[in-house]
Length: 232
Image (cartoon, rainbow, N blue to C red; front, side, top):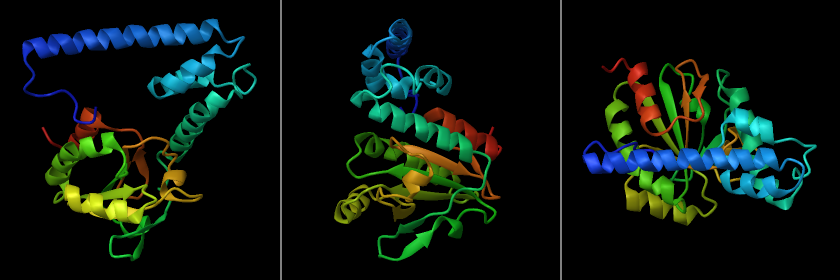
């Protein structure tokens, strides 16, 4: 969850959270075990379809094999897309951020290069009006924005909405204070260039225009920004 743990959680809340973490850890271990024990059939396709987003890169690399009996099962389309997106993100990290063109609410077109590589950190928040987790993350992201907007962080909210009206209505409803752009899914768009296969997703770019991270969220994002801006 982007916002991390609640700071006002009770002892009972914390205990229940730990139990949930233990349960999820046991479940994830069982998923990996079932995949390993069934590499000679198509059963892993089901597990990877449902749980691929919970696997680390090392685990995905172990299970994603073109030669596996389950590799070309229809259920594998989404896991493969996520895997190749992850590889793309790893490839662009510490390299110059790929430039892209996107639309502003007034209809004008802008490029990432207008913001990135100009001596300030840039945070790109990929989202969409139809994405529940994206909407749920707005209070946390507004906190991030308020903390760093005057300290050298340029905040760009890049929507993947195909429906322009839905995007504009969402901007009005949620009163997002940062620079808003729209790059609907199509070949060569921002999501494609950055290997975005699930949202919300955050890209962090250094003042020299190189990608710092493609996968920070929640308390990890908060900790990274605190490190960058020397917060105690």
